[in-house]
Length: 514
Image 1 (cartoon, helix red, strand yellow):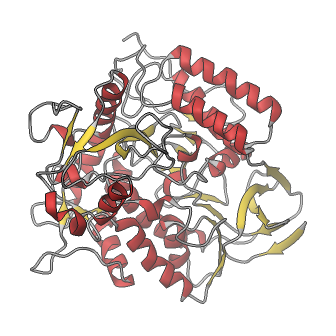
Image 2 (cartoon, one colour; image 1 turned 90 degrees about the vertical axis):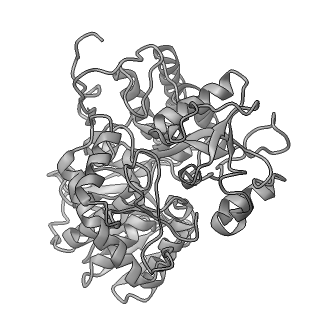
């Protein structure tokens, strides 16, 4: 195996978090390693809603932080949330200067939408529903023009390099048919979430939790992995007809549609969440469960935007309009069929606001990180904000890391999962670790994962999935995105789940009876 000694941060991932870190790490030399060309196979480019920030005269960073804490169902770290929301305006302005074309009102101010659980309209959008790709495109242009950044767009993470003290000293990358060991003062994981562990997902299927799995193998703390957010309005696209298998990943019907007045209905036209005009802007976990229940009892779930958006669809929400038209449905005339699908992982590698994990030399940013700002239920459009704001902070912190002794190094490595086994994994995660969970289903998932692991012991997706399942089984309550039908109550006191490889089971306090 070839060894490369690099004297700056090594960033794994080319989404919004990774590229923000790369730009802010200047003047340090940076390698960005990604398994596909920039703008491909990263969830940032697929985000529709926008980026949350207190930009209106009647808003403030404190109000934004309060909404973030409230949505997180007791598990948001208030100080981290305030750090995020206080950075929000500057982050939007930074992206603006890089060329992100945020929508503007006629007076030149940002056009702001209101999304679920926000008390104010504070979501800055691009092209109605194209924020992620447009913002990321601006960063890609800036990265390609930056002399301090080298991009490897054929490099897949397969391992981490660790010294005898536990410090991370580099990573193993698969580039085509050869592996390269890159030694670096700091490794920044920006590997995305775990949506690819599910069949019903709105994220690229390649996002299978490898970063979290390798960090866990190295001994980093994993925080709250049971909390997966399911988006309530993934568009129900099928191969042939309504009873055929769902296409994966599924396109989104952005939450901004409900912010503009679209309503969730069943096939009879009855409202799923009640008659109140704001009912559909409840926290995502509540809306997702309503959509899931309507599907399970045969009523079906549909997003009716025929009156709220109507003829403005092609111009105001072009991505949603195009997805619907591809399936032969005109959303100006008929409601959009929707399902709840895995969308965002609130848990992940425990990290602070600067991306530092519990292992020296290892940083985590974006969806693979659990920084404490999302808690049990992420506030809408805070994810793009966190990726950019905390990604920038991580880049600045990592550039100050100094190279260390490269003797006595060990490698922690894993492998991908064959496609047939991956299909099996995705089916069991959908069935047992989805919107609604229970003990029997989670224990069945553990047995199935044991069977798969016996055949593929080094498969990183299985290691990541096991963290989610074990933590979900240990949390015998319902909180935010984690709903247990056998434990529907919520404990009065909220506690994090903390997992470390040397500890056999999740560290979750034993709580009093419900």
